[in-house]
Image 1 (spheres, rainbow, N blue to C red):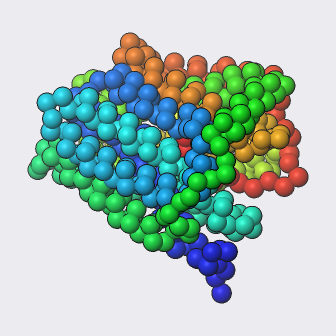
Image 2: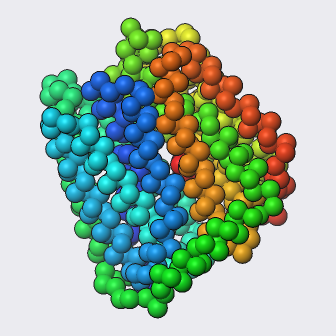
Amino acid sequence: MTQQTPTGRNPMRWVPSLYFTQGMQFFVVMYLVAFPLKNLGVANDQIAHWTGLIGTAWAVKPLWSPFLELLRSKKLIVVAMQYLGAVALGVLALCLHLPAWFAAVIAALFVIAYASATHDIACDGLYMASLDNERQARYAGWQGAFFNGARFFMIGCVMKVAGALEGPMGIVNAWTLVFAGLAVLLASLATYNAYALPGSLSTEHSELTAAGIWATTCEIIVEFFTKPGIWLAVLFIVLFRFAEGQVQTIGPLFLIEARAKHGLGLSTSEVADIYGWVGSGGFLAGSIIGGYFTAWLGLKRAMPVLILAMGVPNLTFWYLSSHLPTDLWHIGTAVGVEMFGYGFGFVGMILYLMQAVAPGRFQTAHYALGSGVMQLGFILSKTISGDIQLAMGYETFFLWTIACGVPAFVLMFFVRIPGKAKASTAPEAVPA
């Protein structure tokens, strides 16, 4: 018999829809929107600048997360942010038809991003409050599976539909229909979650005060930045993702760039097949195997291999840009290898945050701060990637990203990395 939460609700009635919705909003902003912008003629540097700036929402969310405790109902916040995201997606669809469409699209994306970041805080809080420790562990796999299921859906399904519609309808009308459809889907999920999630939509004033929360927040931040070796650790975190942020931003744009401009010239539909299914599958496989590999060796011994794995995407895209293959099987295999390396190596940073940065009196809060630093490092490299690529060209740019991975490898020998833990488990595969 399936066990229930203390509230009497089966977690399988709400965990899948909750975390699919979380992933859906994230992947719209950080992955999906780059493709219509590219197809509408926006330059790589502008795409990188704006999506990078918008992505800071997930980096700075620890700054306002404590104040959400002033509302007792996490469910109310979750459902409200899902409806807000749905409205913003509908507005995004209409923005494509405005004279100043680019500025309007960016404004809509800002709303979606900050609604999604706020949703993430309440979403994880609801999960932890509704399940005891045993059930949290039991359903963590489903949590990660449905978050990453949104990646498959966005890139493998939604992009496929957009690619099929672009020919007969045109780019603007095709993506208008796609974003409108996503708005309806998100609103439907919000309506279901209003019913299915544990807890109440009503709220009451908490005994907590804003002044008390602010004092605790300051204490958490001060203790984080006074930890022994923390500044070297922060530098390591930023450098670990410095090459990744550039490749993961420019790589997909290179796939659809015209061959006359030294890209691979793939259609939106072809990218959906290759990056959505082969790439996402490679990422999940790499994440799972990387987790067990690190559990077997321990983080300290595994870290050199994990950092080298983070260089596989850089090497793979340099190979593609220098050979410019035309065969889809050839390209698909390369992308599968690229994403496998990415997923395998990224495990290293998640475990480094958990085992080297977070431990202490405020472990959960310090993990959130470490994650914020990690995201800021990713955003920094993402934001400048377009300028560097336009200045260098694709082949030299991807060669440059290989060199960008060297500093993190060197710094690894100077930061404290824990050895093999007494009990290790593979982390869920959730990208930044």
